[in-house]
Image (cartoon, rainbow, N blue to C red; front, side, top):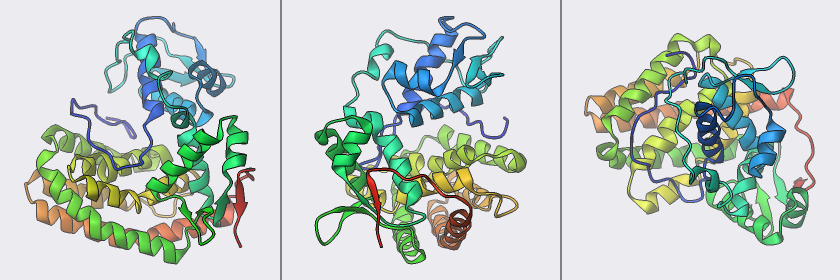
Length: 339
């Protein structure tokens, strides 16, 4: 297994915390991969963010993620110009190429309007919270994405469920800054809640999924120098979202969705941050958790998860400090910086 590739396992779809956005890019990936498998997209056919976003009537963020996944699985390669080209002699990499059913072609058009822009809005706001706090203007959000106020309101409502925005004392939507104090509070909440969720999820997690997690982590350690931001994001999500998502206590799942806003911020930090640590330190910590799960030592796994989150707090603060010194995101009309 090469760095960044994850093993596919046949597992039931886990429950997710309230407010988590559907993985739109994964649906686009499956459809395009099916088109490649059936020859509807022949070798050499070119794809780019703009064309994919237009075809599926989605924003550029999920289109970009879908293209990245297609390249990662060996279906596309960077073209000499802009964008990607379908590879010759496609083998599908580590994942089986899904077949394209007639119903697949309709799945994206059946999504609610808010779902088509949510992923991009979430990423844009969470990224900027590393730099400052922001007021979110629903009217400008609707105008920027050319959607109705109702759609904008739905998006902001999901952002609230995700813990990214909240109401201030004047009932305005604000996205709080990821200050050291705020990051510390969120991590404290995580290390109190996530170990409990892990213990409840452990009995329901398919053993093959845990084995795949361990294989992915060991491959990442072996190829540490080649890991990219999206690779690290996927490994974080496997533990803190997908694995914990097997917990069937809905109230607990809603509770952990608030501090997991940190995972969205990390997605931005992993993308932009140069190597702050030699080998990514969370990798052996995740491996220890997974090893203890495989051995049936659930309480020990929960204690390891708590320790992992406790030491991760300072690392997260260090990442934010370093990134904010080097990166300056562009202004967005629907975000007003708070004093």
